[in-house]
Image 1 (tube, rainbow, N blue to C red):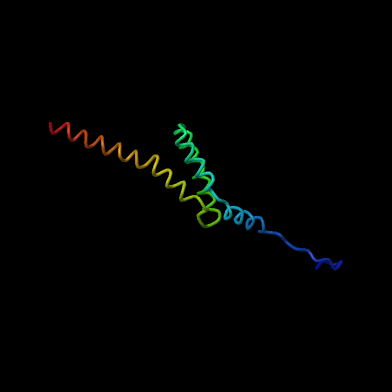
Image 2: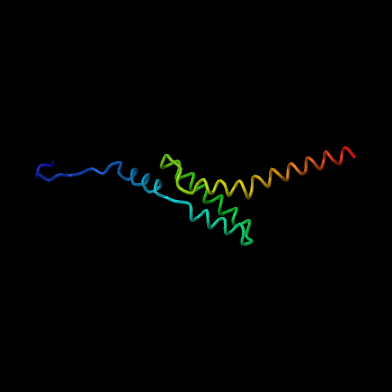
Length: 104
């Protein structure tokens, strides 16, 4: 209470809690679905770029909110399926092909 009898409230630190709540409520399921569509419509590179951007945003939300937002796992699965597993298979095929050519 101040000298006039008015009650004042302090909102210090409240903005940080609001930001945490907003990031905790974010969902990346729709963006994961959009990314999946972009991979298969024929814009693989655009789908990959969108996947990396959306995953970066989801990681920021995870860092701010303290927990993974909805849909982050979908974005990770899309990245594994469309980039990491094919890259690993290409390396394996190159190594097997090199070993097969050496034994001939």
